[in-house]
Image (cartoon, rainbow, N blue to C red; front, side, top):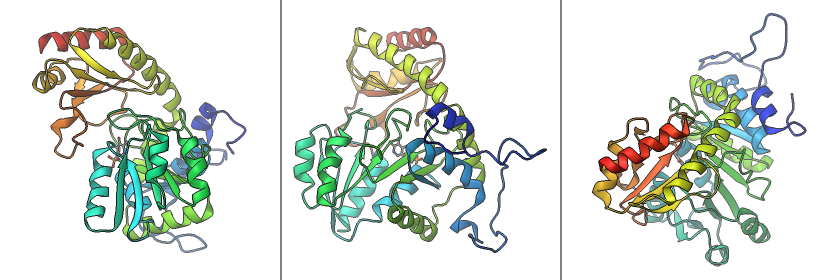
Length: 354
Ligand SMILES: *Cc1c(COP(=O)(O)O)cnc(C)c1O
């Protein structure tokens, strides 16, 4: 079954199913394997595995390109960064997912890339910094500051200069933002978050719409071995089947909580782009109080990661690697699909307790 004429929710439910032969299961099996029967395709799993295909088919159809599954979001990120020629200029957000920035800094220290960090909301400044760049790396919205880039305005200019653009689309998902349609060359996902959606699978993906890009990324996956597991692909495929429903519900909750947090005494700097499931805010009483707030909730789980059906929150700066531009008192709240009134009661209780 093919995607383009179908709406995203139908694609999410119906693409990547086995052929409808009598007696066959509706879902693709979980098929762990290393060696495959030799023929036209791969015969060793590091080169490819039918168990990855349903996940890649659904995600590719949703993003409007071809997806390649990876062992994690970081493995997917690494594969794209590896395409930058030695010493090439890379423009990236001044604050973004800590692991991505740590990896970029490490590459810069080893003179593998010439790294330029920018405010991604300033399109003109970004384009100036991107003069002669090999790659513009975007994350939009950013984790955890929730900055949003004007992807289309950026790619209109970079395309003329021959600069590649990659977008980490983890927070948006293809249901809220389709970077390839906006002119990007690579979409990167941590499928561990909203896509798998249940905090039980580590998985990543790269989606491209050029044959050259696809082949280059696939070659990196095969050589560096950042390949996914069969079970993780199966879990993420099941996650994709309900992504639209989970996202709508969590987003309604997030919008409501962001609105209410803006009026709550003791809370400042509420960040919410107006869509998506992540809300960040600062605790006026300082970092220690912010830490206590996150440890005082009963419904919301004090935990890292995000995008699960259950709401979680944490003070991001408790992590060593978190960029210093992220305020010490900032709490990142990943909103789940619980009852919004229960969540609000919990937020108020936790703030009062701290
Ligand atoms: C979690 C995350 C990553 C890293 O993904 P893993 O699956 O944990 O390797 C990359 N980008 C963003 C925006 C993330 O939130």
